[in-house]
Image 1 (cartoon, rainbow, N blue to C red):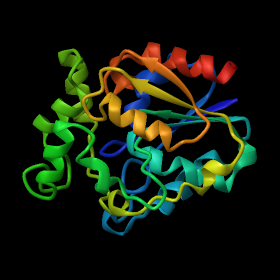
Image 2: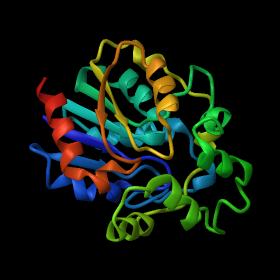
Image 3: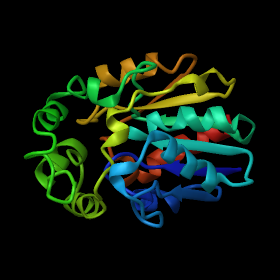
Length: 236
């Protein structure tokens, strides 16, 4: 069994580093295109490109526990549709999963007050010149229950994000595959509040829900606790 970890928006596979030492099986932390080990033109990327990268990272592995975080909720369904026989379980950690044919940007303002501010200033005050989320907004969205060291680590791992997939209508047809799935609901998430996470859960169909008392970047703020959740899911 292998954990394959897919990061969310504004980060690379390195955001999972604090979690890796707590897992009980091999893990692959994927870099999506445009960051880390996969340089690419951020302006030309699609959700399909993200799914291609995850499928490539999985390679010939089977018995995979596929774990996505945040914006990875738009990528995981495509991966499930392409290689359903390789996936043991799909885990959505506080993921954005809009309704079929809807883009994340269309619902982003409903995620909570901080996300609404990002939408209001997208492309302007919310982003630095190179496409990173400004540190003050990132702190408000991602770091509310972190130590100073964890906040510094989180902000230091942020990278520019591809905007196209945020505006692209999602294809959830892969969720028709009969693959067990779990949503990890983060109880102190300031990026996707609980009401938003519940709406995302409703779009996943037959899904188990596990609560974790952590903020949005639980792999950094509570790595041991999140690893324990993933291990229970994998062993169920």
